[in-house]
Image (cartoon, rainbow, N blue to C red):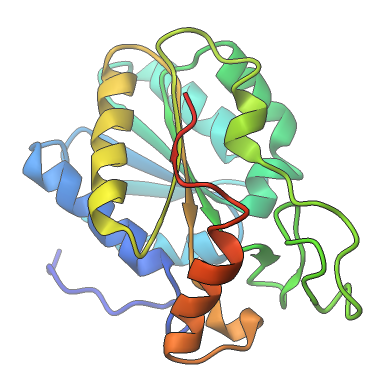
Length: 226
């Protein structure tokens, strides 16, 4: 496969940044050949041929149990589940909580852009309070869900939970390394990654970065949660 694959994501989307940094970490540690990436339904399914690793698509909200099954079948693999905030914390929350509780040795990467991106920008579990969306034109009345903090209550010792952002590449790569090491040690790991969605945020250029820095980061604190 060529090292250059044209991105299918919307202009300004943060997914290609997260995926490229994942590839860089795997390549640096000579782990591309043993890695497999499962994709949920949503914007992340556009990554089906973005990386030079084995990749397949699952049903919406089912990527975590699918990757748990793959890991159990091939326990020498590195099993990654790529999922949006909706797939992780709405339809997929039950599977996510129990995978974390059982300390399944997979790595879950949750892309949090605070909306349902592919279907038009509706309110998601992570939508900020007061944020206007297509389904809440007057503003979301609810507080956003804090996924890593929720899982902190159920994971076992040795698990790794963290949150970072696509415009924090050094920290993101550091957390990816730790998550991989955690999986290799036989434990569950999850990284929530704050990401850009200029299409549904209705921002352009520097406005998009400013929105992430000034709106998302004060609410979704970066760092290791566990």
